[in-house]
Image (cartoon, rainbow, N blue to C red):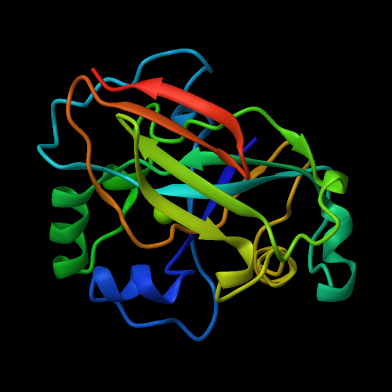
Length: 203
Ligand code: MG
């Protein structure tokens, strides 16, 4: 399986990192080794002094497809949760300056914790899914799928024009504003609506 991540999908987050709002989805990949088993702690890697959280809605791909038309794209995801796109911001900023690939800052081990899945058919409107991230009891990020620049169906259609989607792949759909640094001892809790789906401790 693979993890496909969308960057710059919320205008206010693009602005906080001083990035332009893209004309088509920006995507990158994380490998299977970036998953973090539920219930495990996240250990800050030694190569970065500035690991940021990015809380995102994540969708589970339920069937294989390529060059999927947007009008059929909703059939290709069956579950939703929240996840954290951990990012070594110091390394990423350096890579962006030099025009280098992002993998060392984005695709490292355990950089993609994903919460418990909720069937997507539990949501009457996939364009109105609210999610949150709390750190040490304070709300730091709030998002809603309705504020995405590119909705899920557009992302599935666009990405599948380049890469075949397979059952079990996971799609991170971008972070809203409010990203920041994590420190040892922090407790992250995120979920959809009022329902907590993911909790982890930073070490
Ligand atoms: Mg992200």
